[in-house]
Image 1 (cartoon, rainbow, N blue to C red):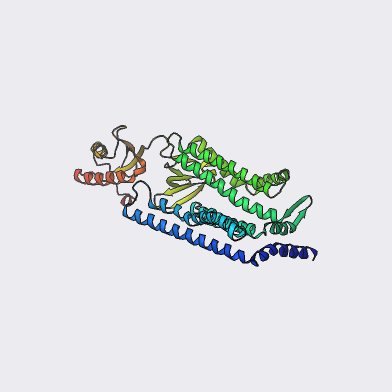
Image 2: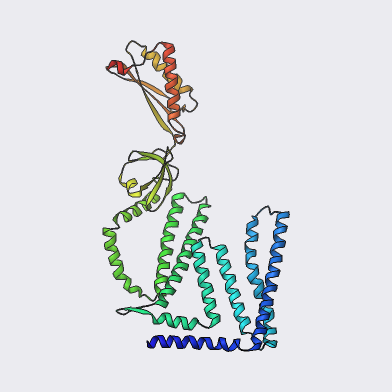
Length: 419
């Protein structure tokens, strides 16, 4: 009850100067000056933006986008209002008996400039709206004289845990700093990543390692800054670190294993972006290597998230590890009464004449064995780029062999009849 009465008395004390100012006739003259300055600034800003927009329509810029010119012009209205108020302020001081309202309007206008700049340049919209609201709230509390009152009231609402005291004021400050610092950390890491992606001197795996370790470092610094702003003793984090270690050993075991496996893959460069790999009967292209998983795109367009631990612990076939060349095998069975040597020559001729078959190493065809069905041949040839697919050349070769065998009187084994 006593705390409520104290807060009520503090609020009334803060209102008294404002009410006293409104009771003077000179105040209204100053308000008219402020309104005139604001109208003049907004009118000039409107005319300038309209003129620039028309000029850009007549002569569009060639090297930069038109939006890059028009967007900063959104800062003109509050900026010009601020300069107009700065011009009016000496007149208000001289003819209105004071310039408190003009100074307050200038402070609010500067806050509006900062808020609009945040909305223009911060891409994360929720973060932008949050920072904008904080800027305007602080400005309003400052100009109305309620800043100290609000801080005192929030600091009076607190929870104590032993020696640790957490007030609503420190919590609010911690949340504000948390959002701003973590957004700044993310923006820094994103800027570094974009810069490194444009660099041709570093391999992809090296760039990813630098970005990931930098991001972890920046987020750790941001976390420590936030804890310090909230008044939390960082030495108390030793207990939390021990608990976290137990959690990693139990509940976060898989996440930690995937993280370590991801770093290992990036360091040893065994799998890279664009590689064609096969793991656990899944074949596809590597589209992304993240801390926890690898993104694999299969031949039918599916995007699979393969845990990094699986790529470390299981057998992985990397079709493009050192070269894109790949071998294709075709098994052919012909009857015993067919000319085996002639069949072998035909298959070699078809393979050598295919446009996607490599000349070195040359195609090979061998009689592997005699089976219950007939003569078993194995035709092998190499293609230069497995990313273009092995089934196309294989399909062409099979159709060509079937047509040539028919023309040459060579009979393929019909296993269904033999069975």
